[in-house]
Each structure stands twice: as C-alpha cells, then as structure tokens.
Image (tube, rainbow, N blue to C red):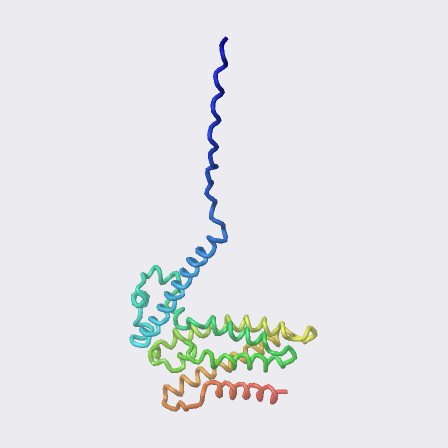
Length: 238
C-alpha cells in the first residue's frame, strides 16, 4: 500500500523587516531655522561692514572722493553684492535713518491720546535724541568729511525729511479728534513745523561748528529750545 508523502515542514517565522521611519518635520525645523538665522546674521554683518566702511571712507576722502568699489572693498565684497544692500552710495549718508524714524513713530504711538498733538510730536522727537546720539543724521552736524559736498547732503536731507513728513502727517491725523476742522491741513502743519525745528537745529549746529562758535549745549537742549520757540510763535499768532 502506498503511503502519502510526509507534509513539508512549516517555514520558520521571519521577523518583519523594519521600515525606516521618515524624520519628523519637527526635527528638521530647528536645522532649517538655524541655517536661516545664520544667513540673516551674515547679511546683517555685511550690511554693518558696508555702513562702517562707508563712514570711514567718507571721513578720510570725503563723499565725492569715495566710490562704490572702495566701500565694497572695505567690506570684502563685490560691487554687485553692494547693490544688493544699498541702491547707491548716497543711501549710506544716512543709513540708520529708517531705524531712527521708526523709533519716533513708535514713541508717538505711545504718547497719551489726550496730549496736545504738537506736544506729542515734539516729545516723541526729543525721546529719540539719546538713543540716536551717534546716528548718521547727528553726525552730519559735525562731519568735516562731507563739508565739500553740501549739495549732496542737502538733497539727501530734503528727500529724507519729505518722506518722513508725509508719514508723520498721517500719524498726527489719526490722533486728531474726528470733528477737528481742516484736520488734514492741521496735521500737515504740525508735522511740518516740528520737523522744521529739527532741521533748524541740525543746520545751526553745523554752521556753528564751521565758524567756531559751537557750544557744549547738548542737542536735546537745543531741540527743546527750538520747540519752545515754535510754540511761542504759535501762541503769538493767536
């Protein structure tokens, strides 16, 4: 009698092959953020080097005697890289003006809403004197380096203050009561008058330094005096 062949022995169980898990997004994020932060720090460092290099070259050779190539070389970058940070060398005359005016705007926003609009603007401008005492705008009042480039400096200042005056006018307008007569005109006069006082202080210090009559009076005191004169003129006209 034929016998059935023996059943094949069962195959040994095999352990499942582990599937590698993908790296969680949360683990990748810090690395990406770290790389992004490093790039931003390098950009800011390059921007700082360009500013510092320009300031040193303006002091040594004057504005007209300094080229974009000179400034780029100081920061060890190419001219092409320079133009990624600044539109022209004129932009480096007042490189921190954006920060300065942003500070003034923030200070004005913090002023009490019931404060007289002109007082609020003047106080906001005065608050910026100390933190920006070494700013490029202040430096223009005593920089011998650009004394021969008055027209360039004057044109840059005119454009700078015109742009900021427009922004300041809108902020003042928002502070005025809704029923203020000729509110837009009043806001423009307040902003223009306050910034005119600032320009007068800058020009006075520059002129006094040039003719040797500069005193030790700090800019903040001169600005306070200029604003007091402005208010006095306003009260006299009433």
